[in-house]
Every structure is written in C-alpha cells, then in structure tokens.
Length: 267
Image 1 (cartoon, one colour):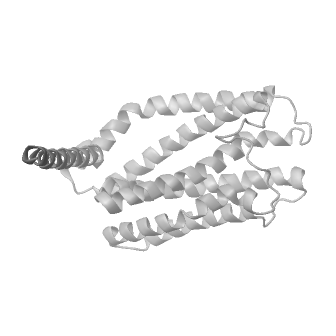
Image 2 (cartoon, rainbow, N blue to C red):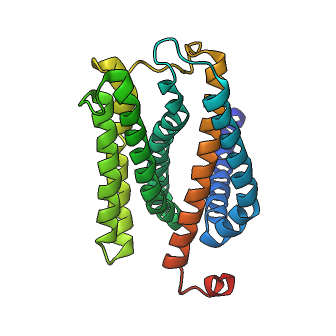
Image 3 (tube, rainbow, N blue to C red):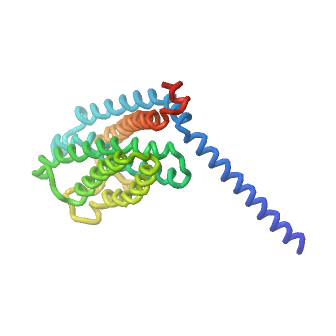
C-alpha cells in the first residue's frame, strides 16, 4: 500500500518536473526564434524563393484564368475578376487573423517581434481589403447592376477596412511604443469578432453575395476549369503578400531596434 502510494507521488512529481521542463523548452524556443535578429536572418534566407515562386504561380494562374477558361453561362466574362477579388478578400481576412494571433502571443509571452508584426501587417491588410472592395464593386456593376450595395458582406468588409485604418492611426498617435503595442493588441483581439461575421454574413442574412463556392466540408460548386486557376492565384497572391509583410516587418525592426549594435552592423 505504502509502496503504491509512494509510486503515485513519485509519478506525479516526475510529471510536474517533465511538464515544467517542457514548458521551459517551449518558452526558450519561442524567445530564441522570435527574436528580431534571428527573424531577419531567417526570412532573408527564404525571401527570394517565396517571392519568385509566388510571382510565377500568380502570373501563370492569372493568365490561365483570364485567357484559357471558358465563359460563365450566367455572368459571361465578367466573372474573371475573381482571380483578383477572391484572393484579396480571403487574404484581407487572413491577415487580420494573423494580427490577432500575433497580438495574443505578444500579450501572453511578451514577444516584442509579435508586436512589430502586428503593426507591420496593418497597412498591408488595409490595401488588400481596399483591393477586395474595389474589385467587388467593379464586378457588381455588370452582375448586380450597381457598384455598391449596403448588404452584410460588403458592409462588414468595409468595417474591416476602417478597422485597419483606425489601428494604424491609433498606433501612430502614440509616442510610447510599449503602450501603443499593448492597446493595439487588445483592440485587434476584440475586433477579431468581425471576421466570422464577414465569413457567415451570406448565411445569416439575405445578401446579394452568393454562398461560398469552396468550403472545407462540401465539394466545390465551381467548375474545375475555373477552380484550379483560382486556387493557384490565391496561393500566388498569398505568397506575394507574405513578401510584403516580410518587408514591412523588417522596416519595423529597423525603426524600433535602430539603437541596437547588431542593427547598425546589419544595415
């Protein structure tokens, strides 16, 4: 009995030690690979590969979609703008999700690189959302007979665009970077509630937008000849946006770490 009880205590102690050790290793891993210096050297290794592969993928997919797919039975050739509109719409929301994740990392683990990435993503997210709104308006003229309609999907996307601009303006209004980073991170996390609203707006309300043609649970309702160049253009566009985020984050690092000796040596 005593032996069994002692074994239980020993196992619990061993579990606590192992868990504590794993936690220390995880924290060390995060802080090691999330340091601005390490980040710069890592992204520089892969930047050119990401850029050229993404550029070629997007151009090939765009050419395929614009020139070699057949006309849509209902929309004619006007649907071809999906090879810009859909990637921009998807990535504008994905960028905000990335900002929310980085904000949580910063608030929980105090990883300053995460704060740099949050503000680095914001202007790119604003531009991408603007492209989604403009391309959607252009598509709406021949499809809906109007360039703008205050339906749920368009309105919630417009709110996302305004959120991006507001976060940028708020951060720039602070002279104390640490306070700005904390406030911005909290606001980004709170604002993330808009992402599922954008996603589900076509299901929750009556809108001009059609339901999603591509989902994780159902077979795509779009013809394969249109689907493959759409997937390719989305992947390529995503890679190009990643490259912009890398450039923007590097600028943030240079600005915020400019007094560090390693930055002066790097530059």
